[in-house]
Length: 219
Ligand SMILES: C[S@@+](CC[C@H](N)C(=O)[O-])C[C@H]1O[C@@H](n2cnc3c(N)ncnc32)[C@H](O)[C@@H]1O
Image (spheres, rainbow, N blue to C red):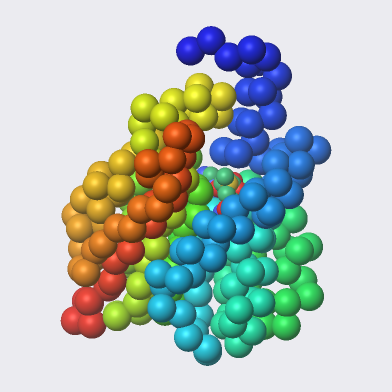
């Protein structure tokens, strides 16, 4: 695909996958602002309630954690991210959140959390970059308490329209909501459903949210 200024744009946008340095911090700030509609829409599907313990996987600059704390001040949210830059910004941004949890460096396919820790887990705009999606989704199931709920949200899910992002970011795997649903089911989630917004807009993306529940009988 021919994109004017592609080399420069790639230097900027590869920080979406692995934020680093000054450009990484700029991208993280842009996402904290630009992803607000996805944060809000994801939380609408998580059936959150006061007192829950929640994990944000690929927490980036902490935008979602701040939004969640604003809505549910008594929820304790931990965050995990593969990038040191993201972890540092997320820690700074959430330091004043009264009920803030731990923000740690780690990867989605080997989460640094004990089994059955969380009531809800979510991953926003990050699964494209996970080297092993199946392992990541299985990890979401493992760290959930029985009856807990997981959500994955993506803006790029139309493999054709989102091609431009893949060519700029580089290391990025775009999947359809149906493919993600299948991975949830194969991992052992039940009540798996997906919701799509804006799919017919003449833009490169909309929003898709895939949710699943860990059964109460899960051991
Ligand atoms: C596009 S940003 C989204 C950040 C945040 N969720 C948001 O929506 O504002 C993607 C984030 O996923 C992180 N990431 C990429 N691969 C990861 C992995 N395998 N495990 C955990 N985090 C990862 C990146 O470091 C980056 O902070």
